[in-house]
Image (cartoon, rainbow, N blue to C red):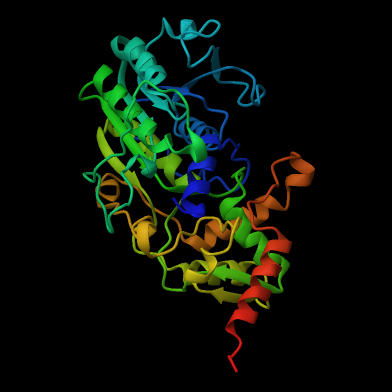
Length: 375
């Protein structure tokens, strides 16, 4: 597992944020009967975006969580409190009554807990949407892989530990998918996103790039301009989830964007244009970058070896159901604008993923020294 692959899993397992700016709520109200939607979580990154979209389209939302993270969010939304683990505190007691058209589970990481939620809700919910991950696929990933690619497995499926470097994360996600499907056969929708990005992303992964280019100067950029990269704006993903609920769509879908292949160099150019046109990217070959100890570059994975297929997942099936993608430049612009508000809005939301300025400067210097003509 490369450092880029590892940091994807670590941040995907822990990401929480609120979409506060840039959310496009101009879409016309849904031309369907209002739905009752239960969101397991709802105070994280994708959850709040989904609540915003669902409300804007006239749906009734209920949130179930521990009530510890951002309890003041969405004061007009019904809130039920408990724990995903039935063995902790009141567990799922708050969900023992009530009916919903759909459940959106974006906070399930262990199959026992996902299975418990889905089984409890099965008699009173029509559809269960489980937010999984492309990490659910077996490594190494195939190039241009579809939803039929082999899934990750683990020797002991009862283990409830992410393991060293989150080694169990992908297999646990795959097992969670299966637990939901077992509890609600024929009524589950499995979503496998890659990098979810955009305003209020707390991981600082994608945000690193527009912010770094905005600062200007020489910028270390790994790999080659032609390397593929896949991202999905949280607002596009949230809108699509609501659309799937409106249509009652079931099945398994890769939620990786954009629709057409995105070149790493194109995204870098967007960051440069939006941030600081005078910034100078210093391209450093993947072979050289991966040899550096303790160095991470966010949202990029070497287009070679075991990670060659990591950013090439096909999304045909999702696009056919209505998933659309805004231009990457718009996401870059909105993310940078959001980041610049964070000291005033909410401290702690403005962190950035590595590398540090010192690591970047050292890499550029080391690369230049290694690139000097010999003799």
